[in-house]
Length: 415
Ligand code: CAA
Image (cartoon, rainbow, N blue to C red; front, side, top):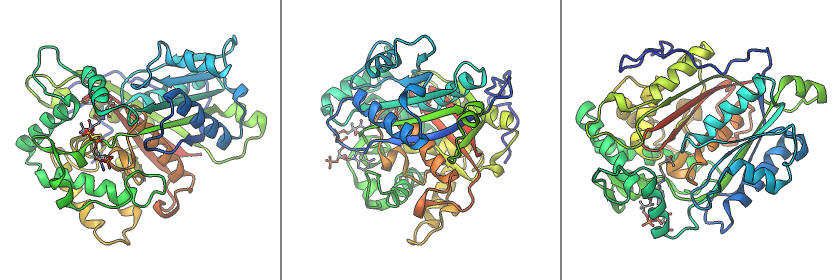
């Protein structure tokens, strides 16, 4: 199914919002870095710095080479103007030639940040931009985490109980079940599938695949959501470095890189409206814009890094990117679960979230979409080990913020 028509299911038609290069400058992702995920006991800003050091290390660039920094704020240690805080702490400021921006589109932040870094490079404003995120939500107590998380997406007039975010997604999951016949088991299979993926990633939190029975039997969090169907709370940092082709050729950079060939962003309400319908979703719009800009469609993509904070998010994403028709996302997940039943499945047959996503790799609040980018980078540069999709050339990465409140999509291509 092609998604290149920018008219959404809701009938909205948008003007293209482009990340394409007006001055003929190309933006390359040249380095990625992560810290471990888990309960780390370190401050988010420390995790951001560690991840950035690793990303710069992979790129082979010193910190002083950065002339742009985009940072995503944390929940555990929020700062006014996060990027300025970090840049000042690291000694990147004061400097007149550095552009520093904080982006808060929730879990979409890393992809919005990647698109912003790409624009800064395309406009010729910056040559080397880092995008950084880090959080320590696992090191917060349950009570403190929920106190902060519940405030983020609570409808002041609404009645969503705590935990607000799982209940918000649960409402949408129930709607999808009623509207399209998605089954409870298909939702639970999202977690089974992601845990099978994670089991192949040495850094993932979930080491042992779940069974359908274990997911359904785990503690109930909301009417159709169990604990094992929640984004797996974790601490962690992640960063990428984006550089211009003119800078890379100046310094004779020859390491593997990935270019950004399309992007799209769209917005939905902060919390589910009283009546849920197709209008509240924004991923379709963001995907359509990204495909149109890249002049590609679903058949051209070899790897998909899709946001999966709860099963319904993954189900909607596989529909939005065009892997499944509208309403068929649950069936598609079921088919993928069938394909991965035996241990020797081929990653090319299930080219989604080969790292395990939020459900199984780990979910440090607004960081995880960066893992989608980092896994895409690994796939496109042939460094994904036993998860490698042979000859992967193009990837689509998607981040989602709030409760379907922000969608950002980027299409990446091996340079
Ligand atoms: N897979 C495997 N194990 C999991 C898991 C998963 N997906 N989720 C939780 N667990 C495990 C935990 O690791 C923990 O194991 P241990 O006891 O061995 O440590 C156990 O299950 C219990 O989990 P919690 O410690 O988290 O349990 P809790 O009772 O403190 O809280 C909860 C339960 C309220 C459901 C909490 O887990 C929660 O709120 N999760 C959702 C987090 C969340 O909302 N993240 C944001 C998603 S939305 C988004 O990403 C968009 C955005 O803009 C940020």
